[in-house]
Every structure is written in structure tokens, then in C-alpha cells.
Length: 290
Image (cartoon, rainbow, N blue to C red):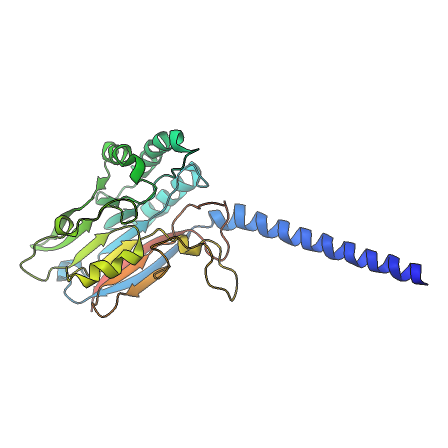
């Protein structure tokens, strides 16, 4: 009798272990091959109080954190470009980490920068602005050259204007806030009116610094966090980088300044080729008056 109970207990344990192994394997397969490539288009309306009438309904598509070649294959970047083209936005913002750099991947980073930019050049929207991320900084001259050669405008402590029917908004971009030096004095326009400013950056928590200095930024577009990448039910994100721990994903108002920030979850992955409960994101933001 005792031997029967022992055999039954061993069989139950084997079934449990087998089921657990299958479940773990299924989750790994889902996270690594399915959700990691399950691009989600997120549409949000952003209300800006001083938005000129010609820009009512102006649409901005945002992609971020490509980490090209490292857990983000060329076919998936092409897929994202195709989806952007289907949306036909008025402007495209690409907010950094085009490549991944580390000691063992440094040699690959330069060709990856050019390969990624060659795919992104297929974005049909003629208004395409970029900012750099922390992984771009160590080879920023190469990344900048790759973007420029492929018709993508890098704003690094710089600004420009978009004009429609005699009205305008400003688009600015800062250097990476993690490993480089954002120069807000250079990046921000010297406005005589309250024309809106849309700012491209990478690290979202730097928004507090920007808002505290009264530059009048209406909307900042950032990435960096990957949205946490792995989001276990009932638990906070566990894979958040420094300068990406406060504003993790989505639309936020920064303090009492009125400045808004949108944090894109990105396309690629870091550290592990997994996404769970946090799919890659293409954002479409529509500007409307407040």
C-alpha cells in the first residue's frame, strides 16, 4: 500500500514538473517570438492650449528604441516602417537608441547604425526628426552620419520650425541626458510669442529638469524605458533603467508646469529578447487645442 502511495506521489510530482516545464517553455516562446513582434499602434490625442488653427489635427507618429540587430531584426523594423506609412502622419519622431553598444558588440554597432537608417529612410513622410539615445552616444558621429545620409534630420541641442498658412510650431531636440550633455539654451527657440514647442529627447525623467526651467515646452516625446519590457501581473515594472523610473509609458503631465510628455515603449529589447504584457509600440499622437 505504501509503495502504491509512493508511486502515485512520484507520478503526481512528475506531472506537475512536466506541466510547469511546458508552461515556462510556452511563456518563453510567447514572450520571445510572439509578443516581441506584436507591434501595437497606440493612438492618443494631446491637447495644447496655444495650438495654432492650421495645426489642429496635426498627427505625429513616434518610434523609439530600435536596438537594431540586437533583439530587433530588420524585418520587424521594416514592418514598423510599413505601419507608419499606412498611417500617413504629418510628422515622424524617432527618439533614439537606434543601435545597442556594449564592449562585445561595439564593432557591430557602426554597421548596424547605417543598416537601421537605410530601412528608416523608407518612411514616406517628408518631415522626419530624430534624437539620440544613450546607446547611440559612444558612436554618435557615426549614428548622426547614418541618419543624415538617409535623409533623417537629427536635432541635437537644436530647433527648427514647421509652418502652415502663416502659423508655426517649433520642434526641438536635445542631446542624450544619460551620457551626453543636453544644452537647453541651444535647444530651445527664443520665442516672442507662445507658439508651441514639441521636444524630442530620450530619457523621460529629464522632463522634470526641463519643466523646472520654464522653457515653455508643451510636449516632450521620449522612450528609453521599453515600458518595463516585462510586466508581471500585479507587480510594478522590474526592468526600468535609470532616468526612466518615474515616467514609464504613455502620456503624463509634468508637475504643475502644464508640460506633457509621451513615453513610447519602443520596438526593441534590452538584456533579454523577451516582452511580456508590454508589446512594442508605434504611437500616433493627434494635436488638438485645449
